[in-house]
Amino acid sequence: MDAILELTVRCIGYVLLDVVFGTLLYWLGWPVVKLISLGRYPRQPSNQESRESVYVSCVGLAIGLLGMMATLGQF
Image 1 (cartoon, rainbow, N blue to C red):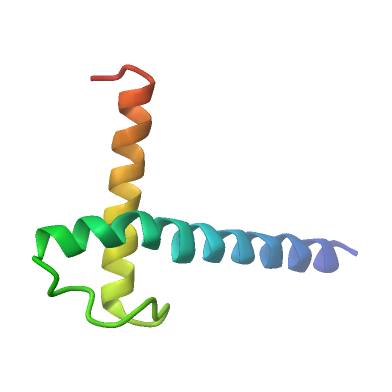
Image 2 (image 1 turned 90 degrees about the vertical axis):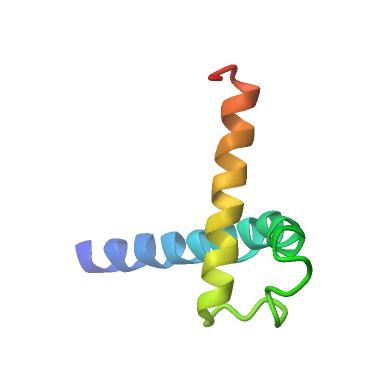
C-alpha cells in the first residue's frame, strides 16, 4: 500500500513540476531572454529536453521570484 501511495505522489509531483517549470516559467522567461539576446535565443520553440529551454525556464523563475518579492514589498 505504501508503494502505491509513493508512486502516486511521485507522479503527481512530476506532472506539477513539468507543468510549472516546463510551461509557465518557460513562457514567463521567453520574452525576457528574447529581449536580452536581441531575438537570437531561444532558437527553437519549447523543447523540454534542450538545455536552452531549461535556461529560459530558470530566467522565468528569477523573474517570477523578483515579481513576487516586489509585490510583497521585500525591496
